[in-house]
Image (cartoon, rainbow, N blue to C red; front, top):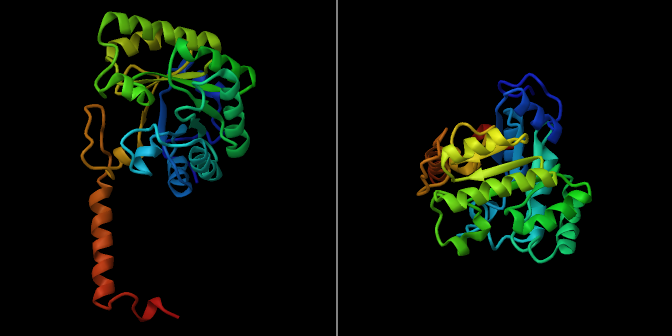
Length: 273
């Protein structure tokens, strides 16, 4: 099936993403955590599918991303990869799998790649995780960085408010971005930072900058699919645009099903053997 507004059906690679930036073509990224959703997302023409540790919130109902385990991330990523034909699939390394030491980090990274067959990994943090980043890259595994609001560090931040508004933190973010690019990362996600800062980072770096709450001058955008489809309720940050109201649609459909079952209308004579 041809992707929506997508003529080129070749497999998206890290090299092609860098080419897209060079050609001024925007990169569309969404999360997915299961086979069925990933199949639809890929078929619709999304360039990158992120198997995010946001599965901890969306799929498991946790308040933060911290509880999700390596085994759980591998389970979700395997399901997604089975469905995808075109998009680049990135899997988040969950909290605790790369912060201890670089040897453990590369061991966990290799396990994810071997068991899921995903295309790349995403790690949160800057210079403080550089030894792990370099070791994983040395193993031949592509890495997407993640700076700004890094949800795995929420207990340190104490809030989900906008990051890098002050000069010192902004300067550190710029330095971190350059360090990640110099180490060999193929892209960086910038989350919830001032648009002007994101624009500067995107202009200074040669690798793609993917924004979430980081303004329109990034090289691409990413959203959590349950949020942009309107499945989640009570989460309405300024950067979120809802493209559907699946919560209402699904509630309506399920309500009709319940009604039909209770009234004996389902199944009817044409729906039985």
